[in-house]
Image (cartoon, rainbow, N blue to C red):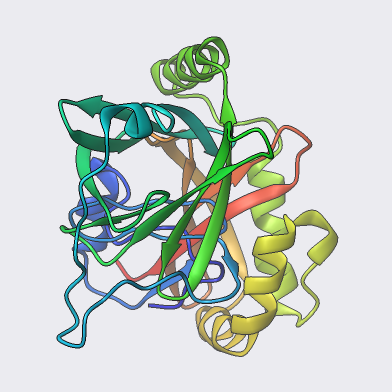
Length: 267
């Protein structure tokens, strides 16, 4: 698969699982997408490789931390407009949970760096000069996604807004038009990077040759049909093109900028 920014995952939502099992070639354009932790995680910007505490055999070694240290990290962290990572403690174990996904254990490899055992991904917690945790960085495949810490009230409001959007199953205003412009930009070799988040724009530039080849093979857009809202708030569309069908998910930020997109070609 091609990931335009890292974030979207091989199994993003329950409905996406079904979509990904369909035949056809998949392409990802994701700046803020997340997959099931048991299968994949995705990050955003391509930066330096994450800290690696792996031994010579390739296995990471966990260390024990006091509950007081673990409690520094519990709370909510916003990874994307509709996606929050919630960190909780159960006894001596920290668990991380993405919006729309189950909890997963994370294990300390140092005082501020943790790793998953169910997937090759890591989390680094960040602190200010007073030692207060201010955010985290989610690492996977040499890519890093920053998330700022948010108050519980903010996290609750985001969850309520997302629940209302999923319940209402109405497309985000402007998402169809943004999707049409995105596809047209790829087809004409002139994507409008100003309409994308910086991470998505960077990923698009990196993968543009492959994306252009795939879209040009399908040809001009003939119709766009809204299919619903996934459990992470992304709008799903079926796009009928001259020589085939593509399935898209798109997320807009509050400013109307495209925060992430995912496309799969095939029936």
